[in-house]
Length: 330
Image 1: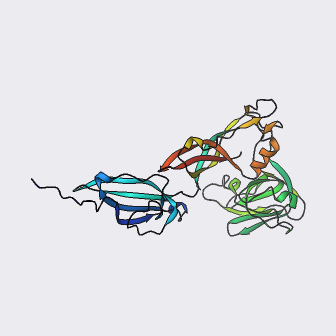
Image 2 (image 1 turned 60 degrees about the vertical axis):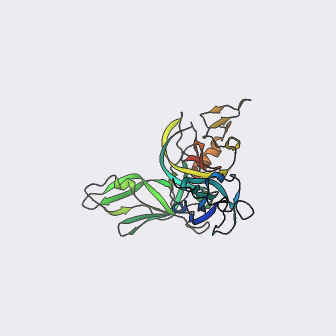
Image 3 (image 1 turned 120 degrees about the horizontal axis):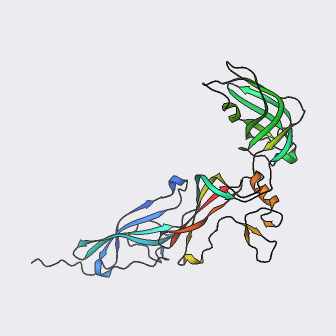
């Protein structure tokens, strides 16, 4: 029977045999957050992991033989794949990680119950309008008072009310409409004379065309006579309503030994302050938080509200990933 070989005490301290860096969030645009890997070898009977709060520094628990510079922002998170090599030796991957930066991802449409609201579309008037054709692209130029321009942003849907415009499909006859829908694609600076911007896109037109037809001409207004314009936003509603809304997923990271002490965001609720106990409510009004004016402003500015409570998930060691979802106010 062979006598097991002993390395004595030369491997009582873990020694690094290979090391590399990982950038797990580079695909999300974060090329800074770093995870450090070290393949370690040591005597199995002497193995024990470092404490979670220790750092990748020579004065703390930096692995013997590590090729990395000291990094006091990288914390020990785990030893992976502990396995025997024979002759009392074990190997493992000693991992240190930085706390990741927060990031967001698109969440698609999400069904959310929005509160009862007395808010309505924002209405004003636009002047100096005209249709500009560029190939098969039709743009609508218009100007707004500077006091109104701040309520309209790139990407907003707007409705123009007018009884004098028509469009003609190729191979079709002239069709009259009393309104048209546009998307704001650019805005001029205040006092520039184009502070309202230029609207592009014609989803309202597309719905009326068949068999690949395209528009041959549009007749709209010109000159300074104002036309009514509405921004499509929060609709007035007499009861709560469940709507699909744009959503984003939020990811933030904390390092803590007690996740129960971390304050987590709850889902959006309307609070009534008309009574002493501040109950949650399903109605936006003058005695609610937010009130109808604030809520209307949130809709105008495209604010996102919390659609789901934040959920903590252990990422590595005592670094936690906290996931939430937000929807655009409607």
